[in-house]
Length: 427
Image 1 (cartoon, rainbow, N blue to C red):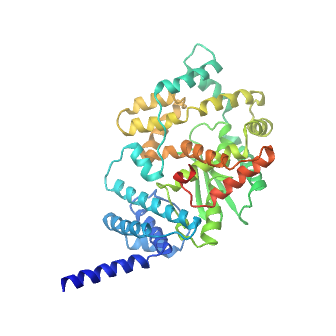
Image 2: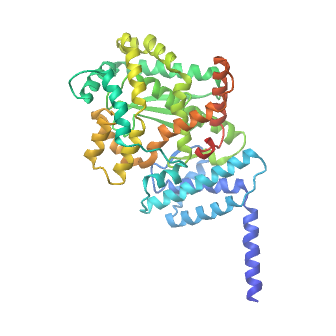
Image 3: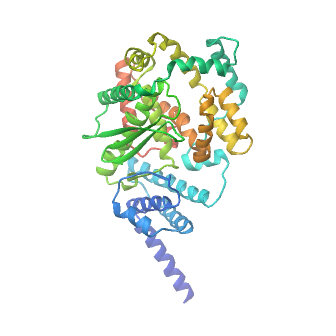
């Protein structure tokens, strides 16, 4: 009799597993992300599914232990799915890795501490390269030659960069022109949802310089933090990154192509601490250079943005040279975060590294530390994400004609923004 009961239970469990389709798991995943959002106010970055699900998550607040149990069940079910085609294989892999990240976030909320690289592997599906101080100092030496003088480099850099601050009373016109140009260039190569729109707001007292709050139906709220000086290059950086072809376009394409056309409901919710973020941030950063290759960017800024900001256009080429050098220091940010979060750097040591190794503006170093405290390993998504997206796009370029090659880059980029592909799939 006992054997019959156990056999019946096994059959029941097997039948349940067989009954769970990919769509079933997707529906459960969406609810689980909303459930975690009741324990972490920053977790759900965007949601544009049925309001009733959000209301239910608030009303019937699940415990973290209950969420973990449900996530583990969903992970078991998705692991049993067999893909009928390549698209479905990507969808299954997406759900599997997103669910793994949901479970890791629950672990964090219950107090588990991950090592930096362990955290980024499970939350973002990637591990950043690391470099020592000597690696970065070789690049800092090049910057030192570009800005000769007897004062400490941080002071020379601050003095030089002060010439490129956008006056606060000109911010709106500069950003309006920048976003319009980003939008126009993106529209040349991508068919954007119609209609699509955004609102622009200037805010203060935030741990970030810009943010896109996606609202659904191809509409975004873009916020720019004006607490610290905003340098002229940030106009195009943020216009492309937060808007076109960055976060606004990424979310709009996922909504249009995957949610509305295919009913892949998992894309109607965006958990911030998840593998999606590496693609989101990486594509947004890569989108800047895609829309404005180096020489075109300098020309546009020199002709349009510098005059609007009341800055000297003749300084644009040298400033662009400086920024290109400083971009090589971007991974110093990741190393500062790792050393600080793992306790090998004090706050003072982390700030010293940021200023003297990463050449970060001294007045913004404390703000950056607050970003590390709030978001931990999230920092890798910007630079590593950009490099992975660029490498992925470049592999799809076969044309030797510049115009044809550019079209191929945009085509590959658009396909990426409309797919469930994550970091592992970019390699």
